[in-house]
Image 1: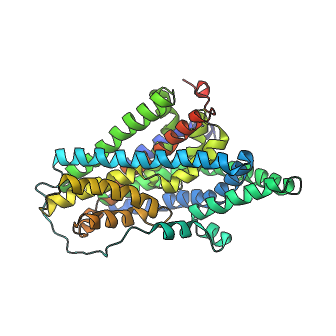
Image 2 (image 1 turned 60 degrees about the horizontal axis):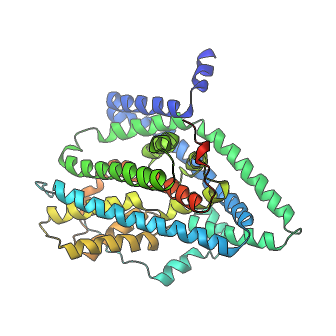
Length: 408
């Protein structure tokens, strides 16, 4: 009992880190048998996925009610979308430059013969139509976050227009949101055990042997994600513009970063990312809008992965990409990030679109499938850190950032 109390007295980050390290050790020792621990990670991701849809519903209904007019919400949404797309473009550019310099596909022996069907960028009309739900309850049950965002904002505005008649329903959703926040706090207590199971399974399954042929590709992805996260998101976005010391920024974000690294789920990280973002001094109104929106729209890390895959493919198959084609990769990745938002497996859809845009073999996907989880662990970090950094920028521009509240 005393040991349990001492364990509970540790910070959540410390407990997650302990689970993370022990999971790696268990994977090394148990090898394939570590798969028996995977159920712990499955429990964690299911618990957090359970929380996401109802929590986002309540948060955005209340956020729309607090904003009170479409003009203000449109201004916040416009700023957020611009930051997301600009970040995606910069991420692709950095990835292309670094991967070309490292020659990540040189010396790779192609072995796979698996092929994939090409995808095309969804049209603007299809994208807009996909945001509007046929049935909001179905959107909740299928966790379609873009559709949940759409009808939640509409409902929030409707309740404000009803005035006193809508007040009881709005009070219900405020209580609903508070209840789901408490449920989230309870679920997060299981995080260290879930992370332990996830890491044990990953290390036991992949080991080191599968990594060696891809070492330059993995290194390029991790280095690019590191540089983009530290210098662009932490240094420029949160630091230079937001006025938050980058060390404080990353210290505050560390729990969400470690969690998403282990789970590879930006959506499941929404509750924890919200807590971290608000600790940065971002107002509830801005954070409650930007973070759920970013979980489906912000593709910074995925864009880096597209750049890695494109350069890898061009060098493996001996296809020289011109500067114009690499610019096309950047533009296509930005457009695809909009068109594929909210689509299950959107990262894979984006990759087929980008490869198809410059006529590279879709067989690349099969070649990278063996290390996809390893690459995914890196690329999800810029996604969730980008959401927080964007929230800082939007809050700063709206006069709703209280950076002085961030603790040393």
